[in-house]
Image 1 (cartoon, rainbow, N blue to C red):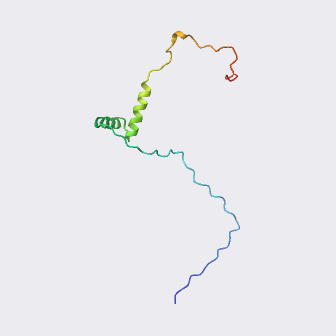
Image 2 (cartoon, rainbow, N blue to C red):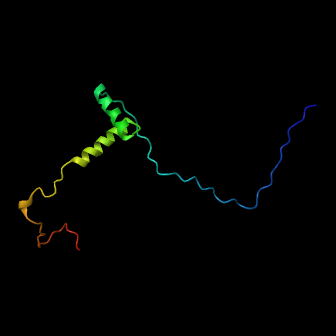
Image 3 (cartoon, rainbow, N blue to C red):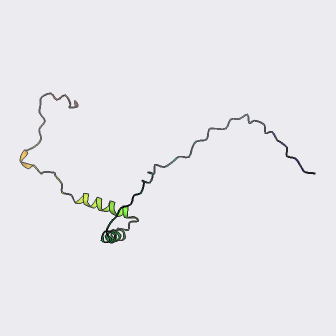
Length: 100
């Protein structure tokens, strides 16, 4: 004789359970979609050397390193017009100026 399954009723819990909070996610940027580019063999070799010298993991990191270095070496425009004299604000009404 085969045994039959029996339905067992579990009594309702009179104590409500606290709401479950979702797990907190860190603000990690989602990976951007990848693209393919064509570069010469010389450029690839140079990027590999930069990766090795700067201990970078990807070609993207190497290219971003080059961008940062270029930005650092750009000349400043501070003091490029020394003959203009110091800046002085006009005393007339300016409707766009925020009152101080």
